[in-house]
Length: 446
Image 1 (cartoon, rainbow, N blue to C red):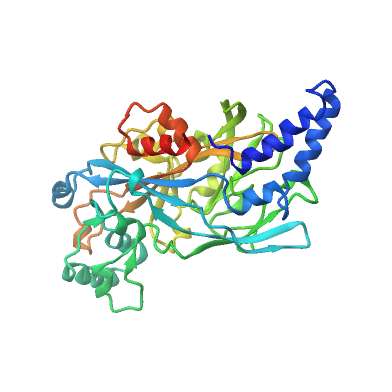
Image 2 (image 1 turned 45 degrees about the vertical axis):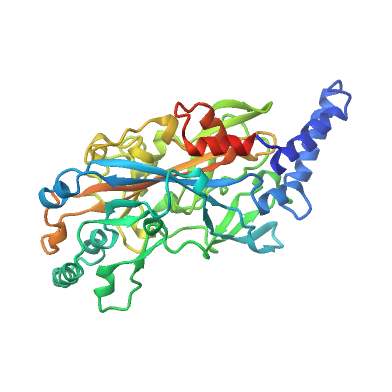
């Protein structure tokens, strides 16, 4: 692991303070000096090490995508068979390399900013090219009955779907699936709508925010905690406490992290706040890091975890809120039937997992974790993993969906947003020595 700006804070503030007191002879004085140095340098204020690391991430961040290819398209289309899926990937992009924009230091101890979105394809860290073709779900066709429930409108939609020769499945390149393509069905619709769609369209050239976070200058225990998102404390997607913006953005936390803490962080990707709990301690280059993981309970059904009741939005699909492992974020996606889960439906109910074939969930590959240096609160390694799915419903009025047997959640892709250091740790354990991402990660680190 390279000694980036985060590492610089540790060596400068922690090790330097210890050496300054004669190798730790005066322990009480040393603890005071360390605490004082951290409180000075860990706040998000122009001129501190924390500010430099906050402005642009100190280590490279990548998003790896695995896209699910449908292996039995004929059976799915003609018989309504269960899809047999095979993941293809990783297709790797560098992200989070642009500095924050529109930065404003406010008088109430907060700082506001926009987070620019940019993704640059890394061919040497990918198994193929962006032009690789995948047989996948037709996003527009599957979303149609959720967006237009009126029978007459669905009959019109069916006409345009047929005239465009569209179906429930389609062949698209990796680049099209991720970043957008002009859909032939939508191009036939004589309404004023954008015919371009993709899982992350639009992305490049857009920004996320406005974020307003506490700097810690007035209260060190609030450092990096989000005060508001888009000028609101609530998201307007959920009921009750589920709708609150809680915690930080996950890149750092207030200093002096304890093992018994619950670390809360907000992710606009999943339209909610979530949390991590302490799992174990990792040592990287001699630095002890607390690993916090997103627990099973975060996606549990309200039957098992009552606090999750406000994430249950559809009594039918959730079977009266008894199913676990998927999150309906349609209210966050303009009514499109998008469901978020952990990769391969990790921690999901068996009935959800068994509606498709070919998935193999396991915690080591599919859980989300953050490795936090406890003194500074800096996240030095992380792997943010999630899966994007669409709800497929039968429709008597839309022929392309008439063979669907019942509503089910259909995986499109899963992603792993990872710092290069955690990619290195993963690759050290990899049994696949030819994994091109691993080889490139090892080359970059060494």
